[in-house]
Amino acid sequence: MDKLTKAREIIDRVDREMAALFCERMKAAALVAEHKKEKGMPIFDAAREKAVIEKNASRVEEPALREFYTLFLQHTMDVSKLYQRKLLSGMRIAYAGTEGAFAHVAAMRIFPDGEKVPFVDFAAAYSSVESGDCDAAVIPIENSYAGEVAEAVDLIYFGSLRINGVYELPVVHDLLALPGAAMADIKTVISHPQALSQCAHYINEAGFAVKEFSNTALAAKHVAEAGDKSLAAIAGGETGELYGLCSLAKGINASRSNTTRFAVLSRAENDPLQGGRGDHFILLLTVKHAAGSLVRAIDILGKYGYNITTLRSRPVKELLWQYYFYIEAEGDLDTETGRAMLRELRTECEELKIAGTYRAHRILKGGSKA
Image 1 (cartoon, rainbow, N blue to C red):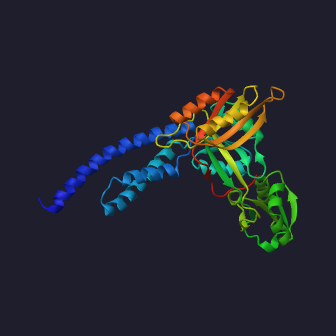
Image 2 (cartoon, rainbow, N blue to C red):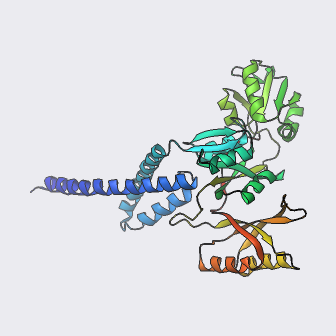
């Protein structure tokens, strides 16, 4: 048997084995897709993918082959994501607001393959997931300028859904106009008052007149429908694309520190994925009516090495002058230390709810303020 014949026989045997292993792997990918749909999780997880590739590539000892095996693994992961997207193409994602609004942009970036379903307010979006009409809801919980989104936090406290991810969407404003319009054509800009304020320096330098709108998405829609080249909107670039507008100027807001954090909520309990433990968590609690209860509760988290990053109080509306506390902290609860901390914490609490565990905040590039 010559070398070529022998090589072809080896390749044919390996290909048969790989075909069987490929089918086995894709069946596992289907289970992952089911898990993600239940939890309301996006398909792509960059940190998890990187860890899998690095772990498996290290099993190839020869450096020259390891380089190509890394490429092979990346292609395999890409095929797996395509298959999961096909399986999850019917996933319905709830958000509150208008198409092109801030929440819609966040939903598009987190779930690019899901069907985005608009609702009139946070409560309606939240209820759609509780009822099973939608698979997950993308709801803002905090803005770096305006602070917490109180209505959303109350929904999380009183409702049944669980947080399985927190994402940060920076606010970037563009000057949007009709196709063919030039900067010299623009006389008036329209947008949400906060967006106009954030872009005030640019507007004043350009000498534009301003008109307030209820949100940036509706402003962009109005420009698209008005057909007036002298009119421009201030909104995000993706919002402009949705309404067929062009960006005459990008990133015109003076501050780059305005960011909104979105929580993704689903019906399923939020247990960590295999190999992907949550390193952050949110607790909602009420403490006993005794001197020092809150202090002792906070001390318990510190005692077990958990770093509190956010602590706020919110009124319990049904009970006059009663409050619950919202806590975000760093650390993994899925450990013996975490379980011991929760046992001790419950001794100081009237109520204790784990709202969600998730990995460190992921930044979604782009976005608009609406």
